[in-house]
Length: 295
Image (cartoon, rainbow, N blue to C red):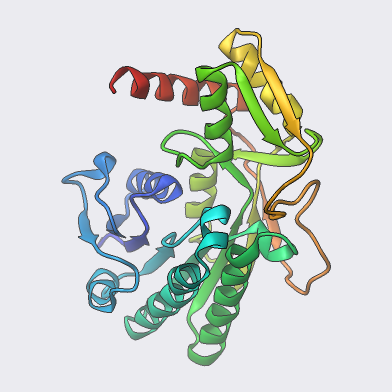
């Protein structure tokens, strides 16, 4: 039997690289397109070092594929706020190019990494770029019949995370100084999901049970931010100081929930078995400690 071929756009990144790992485990043939190489997948897959706006590279990566995941683009809300044109180009126009190539190549299903912020009035240009991309993808489906799934992720954490990842930032500050500056009251609520759990769920949705829908992929471990920070301190086994800064200068983050009234129906899926958040934090601490020692 021929292996199903999957293109992972942004496959060298935080979530994308874990998706590639999970696809490997489940026997798919994987192609990766990213602006940088990935140490985790050297010599294992066909890799295209290119920007998502490079239509020739997109064509070569996607042609002949059964499925396409799009994780490419700008995911940092602060970066998106500071660079609106680049955000719209990468997140919206890039998704449009990828969708067009998928239609031309008769891809069976297009899976788009969106965000829970599409429900919100927060998130600045990051939110609006994702909302716009979702509308475009839906229109492509209506016009050409290609199937899609919008993957709207909650608060991700785990190994390989970016420097701006919230959990990584807090661990880094507490490891380095024992002091963390937290913007907010500490009562903010987040549904944390380990990146490996998110990857498993993201590959699960390739089956035919999920067609032309939005999926909220969130964790089962709901915590206030202050609880999460104290847990990091306990795992580090050190006294910590938490400076609560009760004003978000960018006003881009929700407090308790991202939801505002909006006609965007979606299913919610969470892992029935999952990485415990304490173990996940310990894993990140060990990874970051190795990085510091290798500097």
